[in-house]
Length: 232
Image 1 (cartoon, rainbow, N blue to C red):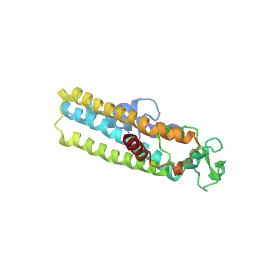
Image 2 (cartoon, rainbow, N blue to C red):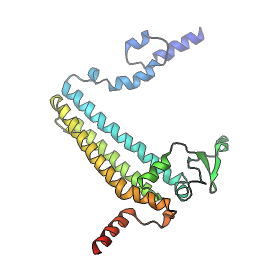
Image 3 (cartoon, rainbow, N blue to C red):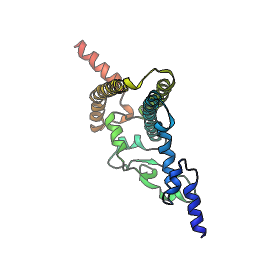
Image 4 (spheres, one colour):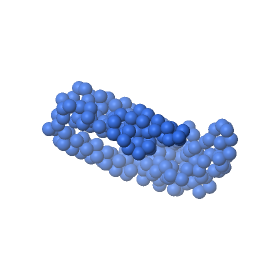
């Protein structure tokens, strides 16, 4: 009897719809916390307001993705052995997760080489950074800072399209197509240029055994090489 009453209380707590009380005694109301908050058809009366909410929500969710990426690079700067791994990837295991001395959790830390203890990283994020040309901690800091700047930019854009823009339901398809073309087109063009001028030279230098600490800024190296070719 006690467990049945507890199950009834659990299923009815914080539910937003009367239909939730007629369902099975489960944790459905937890999932409704997210689904009802994004049910714009019940919250808004006009199609224009719904269009603005959908468009603004899409932009703000993109900002949270950049916040996630910024956290990745921040963690790689201050809590990983990435710089040591780039020097000797064969004898050093990647790790970016160090457990603190709390309730014995530090027992999970293992020796990954080069006097570094942490949990082994098997996601391949270090290989991705090496391919991108991020070979120093300064590069990771710049990337993390740039991602944070994009977070603020997307949040401002989300607020603008929700409260300041005059977008209507008739121009939604045009606006979404326009933004997708800009983001995908400029992003693909910039990424291809980065891989050709930064990623490939950095990988060649690291494969030849050069210490990442003595490699100059790859953008300056590219410009100097172009100037040197012009003088010849």
